[in-house]
Image 1 (cartoon, rainbow, N blue to C red):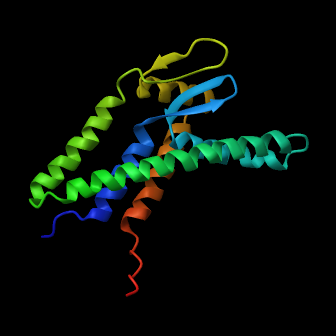
Image 2 (cartoon, one colour; image 1 turned 45 degrees about the horizontal axis):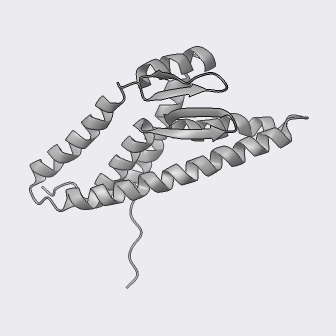
Length: 170
């Protein structure tokens, strides 16, 4: 049986980073530190407002700001995932490779329990763990919000993981 390949490792790490690492959102005086997956969800939340009379300008500006943040963080996460995947792929032993990947993912999961997520406008930032943050999101936006955001993101990343790679032209 073949060891897990570079491509799979890369997309697993990218997904883990996208769902766990706090990314800073800067909107004037408002600072927020949350997983970048919520910026993508924010774009989806704002798009319908584009078509409501009187909301088009602010909605478009919101989409542009969130889109810039998504592109920047996706690029950073992709670069990190490429570098870490190359290092992990250098490990020849299949079990050691899987254990290293598992330890990396576990460390990201444990990191989410630290108080490194938060938001604040003119008031001081309230720092919380990811669990507390997700509970607050569910209270503010509805019971299924976190499930929809994370479920959709995981499905998209699973698609990237299992799609057939393009054939190399040589």
